[in-house]
Length: 95
Image 1 (cartoon, rainbow, N blue to C red):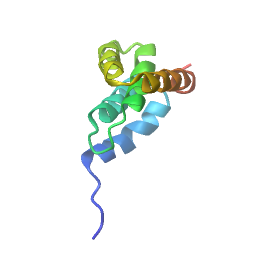
Image 2 (cartoon, rainbow, N blue to C red):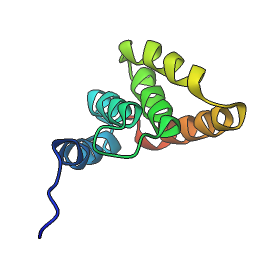
Image 3 (cartoon, one colour):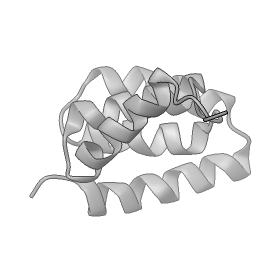
Image 4 (cartoon, rainbow, N blue to C red):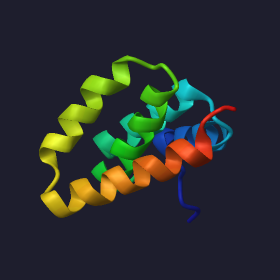
């Protein structure tokens, strides 16, 4: 029988391209999807990175979420998260 696509997976499919084009609120939403692990495997490193780029682009509510996520990460994962964040800010910020 065909695999059903959850609303969260559809949300990810919808928001990911927008986020990658630099849409700040799409970036916030992707961060939330990864933070909560709704319909995708929870990935706090990815959540942090997407929140970071959203915050960089002026989405102030991303800051508190970033701090929450950071508190749950090991030191190694924090380092990875910060590295991804810097990359995403370069790659996915609007000019």
